[in-house]
Image 1 (cartoon, helix red, strand yellow):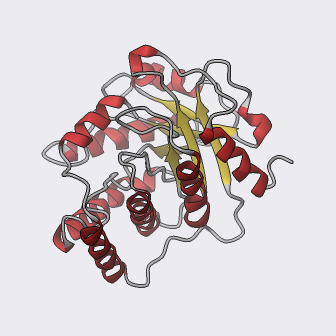
Image 2 (cartoon, rainbow, N blue to C red):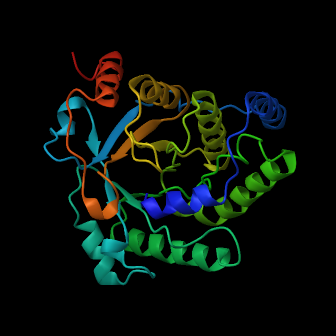
Length: 286
């Protein structure tokens, strides 16, 4: 969730594909995913979580959101947390049993993969031992967040490589979590491309989840520029996740970067008006 992750991500990806390449990519995805589909768990209520810090914002619980507690390196440190750090994280304000571990400096791709997986296992195991009732998840690890490979832009071999990486990581980490928290933040302004990226990442989360629920992280700002999303784009993201996932986590939000503090609350912002529309449709508010 840190902005540096966006910069690293953007620097290693190619330019946005034109519409011809994009349509071809969608065909590749359809062929490779076959009959697999991302569908919510039957009879399970769609969960709404908020992890929002905005100056002057209301209590989002009044709008049907639950608080989601996130334990990051500010609490856990940059290495495997000790018992005191775990206890400190468990004492963070919580409105439910859910807790997300977000340590983004442990890469699950490349030469450090095995070491990172071992660190995640030790960390999750420590939380489980300290509080067996806690419902644990990892931010943006299951699956590895990916845009270009996931939508087929880099070809069938790259798409298959991404899936194989997720299979290997999931075999080691899914048994340690209760929920999967894929990240679907917005890197580009193409709506169709975002929908394809979201669908592929959610389908992949379903494939590796062992039947565990999938709650998607959304952020109402563009990851690089920090401009707030237009209302129609944000509403599309909410309804896409409603159709495919078991819940959403609305995260944010920052003014100009991590050191600039949170953005100011704007009741009339397009993204919030789109959220209210979505909440009315969900029966959360009148």
